[in-house]
Length: 217
Image 1 (cartoon, rainbow, N blue to C red):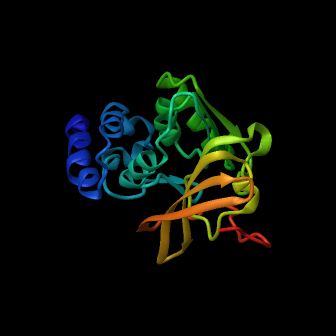
Image 2 (image 1 turned 90 degrees about the vertical axis):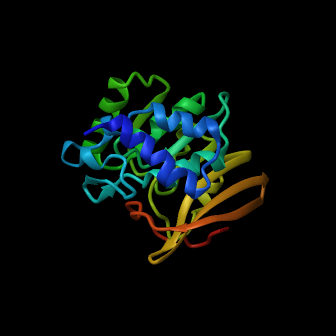
Image 3 (image 1 turned 60 degrees about the vertical axis):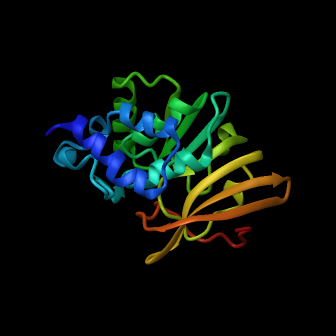
Protein backbone atom coordinates (compact mmCIF):
# COMPACT_ATOMS: atom_id res chain seq x y z
CA UNK A 1 0.00 0.00 0.00
CA UNK A 2 1.44 3.37 -1.06
CA UNK A 3 0.28 5.58 1.81
CA UNK A 4 1.96 8.69 0.41
CA UNK A 5 -0.11 8.36 -2.76
CA UNK A 6 -3.21 7.59 -0.71
CA UNK A 7 -2.71 10.81 1.30
CA UNK A 8 -2.35 12.79 -1.94
CA UNK A 9 -5.50 11.20 -3.38
CA UNK A 10 -7.43 11.96 -0.20
CA UNK A 11 -6.54 15.64 -0.44
CA UNK A 12 -7.24 15.98 -4.15
CA UNK A 13 -10.29 13.71 -4.47
CA UNK A 14 -12.02 14.08 -1.07
CA UNK A 15 -10.97 17.29 0.66
CA UNK A 16 -10.66 19.89 -2.10
CA UNK A 17 -14.01 18.92 -3.70
CA UNK A 18 -15.55 19.29 -0.22
CA UNK A 19 -14.42 22.91 0.02
CA UNK A 20 -11.38 22.29 2.21
CA UNK A 21 -9.17 24.99 0.72
CA UNK A 22 -7.20 26.22 3.75
CA UNK A 23 -3.57 25.58 2.71
CA UNK A 24 -2.42 25.10 6.33
CA UNK A 25 -5.07 22.43 6.93
CA UNK A 26 -4.23 20.62 3.69
CA UNK A 27 -0.50 20.74 4.49
CA UNK A 28 -1.15 19.32 7.96
CA UNK A 29 -3.24 16.44 6.62
CA UNK A 30 -0.51 15.61 4.14
CA UNK A 31 2.09 15.48 6.92
CA UNK A 32 0.33 13.57 9.72
CA UNK A 33 0.33 9.86 8.91
CA UNK A 34 -3.24 8.71 9.47
CA UNK A 35 -2.29 5.07 8.89
CA UNK A 36 -0.24 5.16 12.11
CA UNK A 37 -3.46 5.74 14.08
CA UNK A 38 -5.66 3.15 12.34
CA UNK A 39 -6.13 -0.40 13.69
CA UNK A 40 -3.99 -2.88 11.71
CA UNK A 41 -7.02 -4.64 10.21
CA UNK A 42 -8.18 -1.37 8.64
CA UNK A 43 -4.81 0.16 7.75
CA UNK A 44 -5.31 -0.08 4.00
CA UNK A 45 -8.49 2.00 4.36
CA UNK A 46 -6.82 4.74 6.40
CA UNK A 47 -7.47 7.34 3.69
CA UNK A 48 -10.81 6.04 2.42
CA UNK A 49 -13.88 8.27 2.52
CA UNK A 50 -15.49 6.49 5.46
CA UNK A 51 -15.53 6.17 9.23
CA UNK A 52 -12.87 3.62 10.21
CA UNK A 53 -14.10 1.28 12.99
CA UNK A 54 -12.04 1.29 16.19
CA UNK A 55 -13.95 -1.35 18.11
CA UNK A 56 -15.99 -0.80 21.28
CA UNK A 57 -18.67 0.91 19.17
CA UNK A 58 -16.34 3.77 18.24
CA UNK A 59 -15.12 5.01 14.87
CA UNK A 60 -12.82 7.67 13.43
CA UNK A 61 -14.63 10.52 11.72
CA UNK A 62 -14.31 10.50 7.94
CA UNK A 63 -11.22 12.47 6.76
CA UNK A 64 -13.27 15.18 5.06
CA UNK A 65 -15.27 15.81 8.26
CA UNK A 66 -12.06 16.16 10.28
CA UNK A 67 -10.65 18.53 7.67
CA UNK A 68 -13.78 20.69 7.57
CA UNK A 69 -13.77 20.83 11.38
CA UNK A 70 -10.17 22.04 11.46
CA UNK A 71 -10.90 24.63 8.79
CA UNK A 72 -14.01 25.92 10.57
CA UNK A 73 -12.38 26.14 14.01
CA UNK A 74 -9.46 28.25 12.78
CA UNK A 75 -7.28 27.27 15.75
CA UNK A 76 -4.38 29.45 16.85
CA UNK A 77 -1.17 28.40 18.57
CA UNK A 78 -2.02 30.05 21.90
CA UNK A 79 -5.36 28.22 22.23
CA UNK A 80 -6.42 25.39 24.51
CA UNK A 81 -8.70 22.71 23.08
CA UNK A 82 -10.92 19.96 24.43
CA UNK A 83 -11.73 16.93 22.29
CA UNK A 84 -14.53 14.61 23.39
CA UNK A 85 -13.83 11.10 22.13
CA UNK A 86 -10.11 10.42 21.71
CA UNK A 87 -10.64 7.32 19.59
CA UNK A 88 -7.27 6.46 18.05
CA UNK A 89 -5.66 9.82 18.88
CA UNK A 90 -5.45 10.95 15.25
CA UNK A 91 -7.75 13.96 15.49
CA UNK A 92 -6.01 14.99 18.73
CA UNK A 93 -2.71 14.94 16.82
CA UNK A 94 -4.18 17.26 14.17
CA UNK A 95 -5.59 19.60 16.81
CA UNK A 96 -2.31 19.62 18.72
CA UNK A 97 -0.44 20.75 15.61
CA UNK A 98 -2.62 23.88 15.46
CA UNK A 99 -3.15 24.67 19.17
CA UNK A 100 -1.08 25.17 22.31
CA UNK A 101 -2.57 22.29 24.26
CA UNK A 102 -5.21 19.59 23.74
CA UNK A 103 -7.05 17.52 26.32
CA UNK A 104 -8.79 14.56 24.72
CA UNK A 105 -11.25 12.50 26.78
CA UNK A 106 -12.07 8.86 26.04
CA UNK A 107 -14.72 6.82 27.87
CA UNK A 108 -13.37 3.39 26.81
CA UNK A 109 -10.16 2.60 28.74
CA UNK A 110 -8.56 0.38 26.03
CA UNK A 111 -9.11 3.10 23.43
CA UNK A 112 -7.67 5.71 25.79
CA UNK A 113 -4.57 3.57 26.25
CA UNK A 114 -4.23 3.09 22.50
CA UNK A 115 -4.65 6.79 21.77
CA UNK A 116 -2.05 7.62 24.41
CA UNK A 117 0.39 5.14 22.90
CA UNK A 118 -0.22 6.40 19.35
CA UNK A 119 0.34 10.03 20.30
CA UNK A 120 3.49 9.18 22.25
CA UNK A 121 4.87 7.11 19.37
CA UNK A 122 4.29 10.01 16.97
CA UNK A 123 5.98 12.48 19.32
CA UNK A 124 2.87 14.57 20.06
CA UNK A 125 3.78 16.13 23.41
CA UNK A 126 1.02 18.74 23.80
CA UNK A 127 -2.00 16.39 23.73
CA UNK A 128 -3.05 14.61 26.93
CA UNK A 129 -5.48 11.68 26.94
CA UNK A 130 -7.76 11.48 29.97
CA UNK A 131 -10.13 8.58 30.64
CA UNK A 132 -13.74 9.36 31.50
CA UNK A 133 -17.20 10.30 30.25
CA UNK A 134 -17.07 13.60 28.37
CA UNK A 135 -20.65 13.55 27.11
CA UNK A 136 -21.35 16.72 29.14
CA UNK A 137 -17.92 18.19 28.56
CA UNK A 138 -14.87 18.07 30.82
CA UNK A 139 -14.88 20.88 33.40
CA UNK A 140 -11.48 19.98 34.88
CA UNK A 141 -9.56 22.28 32.52
CA UNK A 142 -12.32 24.67 31.43
CA UNK A 143 -12.80 27.20 29.99
CA UNK A 144 -11.60 26.22 26.52
CA UNK A 145 -10.93 28.20 23.35
CA UNK A 146 -12.37 25.35 21.31
CA UNK A 147 -14.23 22.09 21.86
CA UNK A 148 -14.49 19.30 19.29
CA UNK A 149 -16.88 16.38 19.65
CA UNK A 150 -15.70 13.33 17.71
CA UNK A 151 -19.10 11.62 17.76
CA UNK A 152 -22.65 12.67 16.98
CA UNK A 153 -24.85 14.35 19.62
CA UNK A 154 -28.67 14.53 19.61
CA UNK A 155 -28.27 18.07 20.99
CA UNK A 156 -25.35 20.03 22.42
CA UNK A 157 -25.62 20.05 26.24
CA UNK A 158 -25.72 23.35 28.12
CA UNK A 159 -22.93 22.11 30.38
CA UNK A 160 -20.60 21.65 27.41
CA UNK A 161 -21.39 25.07 25.94
CA UNK A 162 -20.74 26.69 29.32
CA UNK A 163 -17.15 25.41 29.17
CA UNK A 164 -16.32 27.64 26.20
CA UNK A 165 -14.54 30.93 26.71
CA UNK A 166 -16.21 34.04 25.33
CA UNK A 167 -15.24 33.87 21.67
CA UNK A 168 -14.73 30.13 21.92
CA UNK A 169 -15.93 27.73 19.23
CA UNK A 170 -17.46 24.27 19.37
CA UNK A 171 -17.66 21.80 16.48
CA UNK A 172 -20.08 18.87 16.65
CA UNK A 173 -22.24 16.71 14.43
CA UNK A 174 -25.75 17.23 15.79
CA UNK A 175 -29.00 15.36 15.20
CA UNK A 176 -30.18 11.81 14.61
CA UNK A 177 -29.63 9.67 11.52
CA UNK A 178 -30.30 10.26 8.73
CA UNK A 179 -30.63 14.02 9.39
CA UNK A 180 -27.37 15.11 11.01
CA UNK A 181 -25.70 18.50 10.58
CA UNK A 182 -22.13 19.51 11.35
CA UNK A 183 -22.43 22.72 13.37
CA UNK A 184 -20.03 25.43 14.52
CA UNK A 185 -21.26 27.14 17.69
CA UNK A 186 -19.59 30.37 18.84
CA UNK A 187 -19.98 31.76 22.34
CA UNK A 188 -20.43 35.47 21.68
CA UNK A 189 -21.24 36.58 25.25
CA UNK A 190 -21.97 35.11 28.68
CA UNK A 191 -25.41 33.87 27.64
CA UNK A 192 -25.28 34.32 23.85
CA UNK A 193 -24.37 31.62 21.34
CA UNK A 194 -24.40 31.66 17.54
CA UNK A 195 -24.90 28.34 15.75
CA UNK A 196 -24.06 27.84 12.07
CA UNK A 197 -24.90 24.72 10.07
CA UNK A 198 -21.82 23.85 8.00
CA UNK A 199 -22.85 20.73 6.08
CA UNK A 200 -25.00 17.60 6.22
CA UNK A 201 -23.25 14.40 7.23
CA UNK A 202 -23.51 11.34 9.46
CA UNK A 203 -21.32 10.18 12.33
CA UNK A 204 -21.24 7.42 14.92
CA UNK A 205 -23.09 8.59 18.06
CA UNK A 206 -21.04 9.59 21.07
CA UNK A 207 -21.36 7.12 23.95
CA UNK A 208 -23.75 8.26 26.69
CA UNK A 209 -24.90 11.24 24.62
CA UNK A 210 -28.50 12.05 25.48
CA UNK A 211 -30.64 15.18 25.37
CA UNK A 212 -30.30 17.21 28.58
CA UNK A 213 -33.37 18.54 30.35
CA UNK A 214 -32.84 21.92 28.75
CA UNK A 215 -30.66 22.81 25.80
CA UNK A 216 -29.57 26.10 24.32
CA UNK A 217 -28.94 24.82 20.82
